Amino acid sequence: MADKHRVPLLRSEFDTTKFTHLLHFYLDDAFAPYVTIHGTLVDVHGVGVLVTGRSAIGKSEVGLDLVERGHRLVADDTVIITRQSNGLLMGRPPPVLQDHIEIRGIGIVDVKRLFGIGGTRRQKRVEVIVTLVDWDQEFDYERVGNEDRVKTILGVEIQEITVPVFPGKNITVIAETIAFNYLLRLDGYHAAHEFNQRLIRRMQGPTK
Image (cartoon, one colour):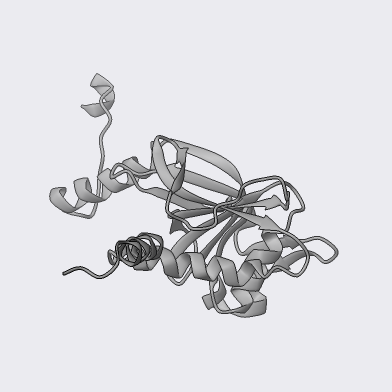
């Protein structure tokens, strides 16, 4: 009858409720809007940190260093970001690049084989963007952190932190600090705001 009337017929071993539930999640992922971004996505202390910047500025090297320090690589060079129905941005690698990272001077490195299964993961929510830029002494970089900058991806605003790069600067430790600071903010503590309030109280002097 389905063939006669040209009506699709679905068959499943699951009951109707479970099948429709699974189908909903599948279709939500299959038809989710997506964009491809050049960068390196790493799970740092449970925070999805997307490292971006010009070509050859050191994104992959930062990713590899983070993995060596116990964090998990999600994607290198090409990050596919999809917007879920709840407004979350999820990042994952293209299947052909999964678990691999490119280091100039070495070539392609299999992170999963080098560091074990705990060195990679298949996908991660994108929560913070770290943009690496070349050091410019004329540029006014953020010194206090009182004002948050955001970058919009697929209509979702993500906190963006610009980090100037110059020889000797430890970007890996900075990335870890950014992740910790993000977690503190989730708990309601904003270091820059707290410091600003402390200065205001100090300038006001003792109160009667």
